[in-house]
Length: 139
Image (cartoon, rainbow, N blue to C red; front, side, top):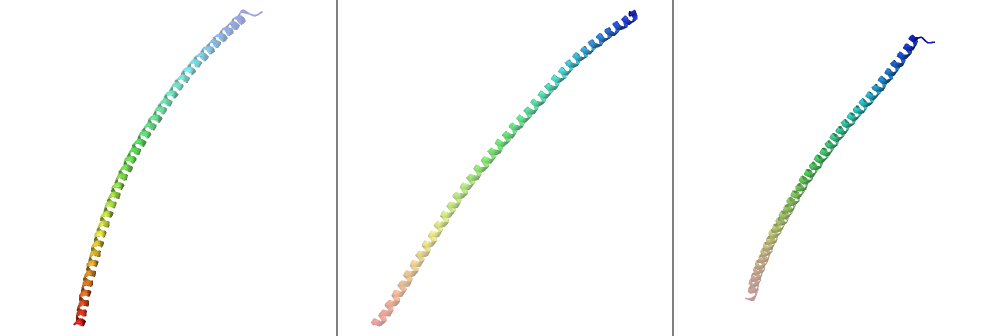
């Protein structure tokens, strides 16, 4: 049969095997908890980074839209100012044109009056010359 030493050795081996198995179980459980904690910590960090990123994107989008609205407002004011300036310029051109037209009409009327007066004078001179010549022959 087996000796007492062998039984003690076998019992020692079984005890050590159990202790080792319990230690391995404990380490596995600890590792599983540690992995779960690290995983949750990592997920929380990822969520925080994603939220920060989303907030930055949202802020950047809002700033960009605000700048776009400001640029559109400035452009709209600029276009409005330019339209007013062009309308004023058009009015000035029309006024200038009307004045020039009026001046030309007055100048042409004066020229016509001078021509009529010149023709009258010429006709009067010709009539008088004709009457002189006629009187020479009638005398």
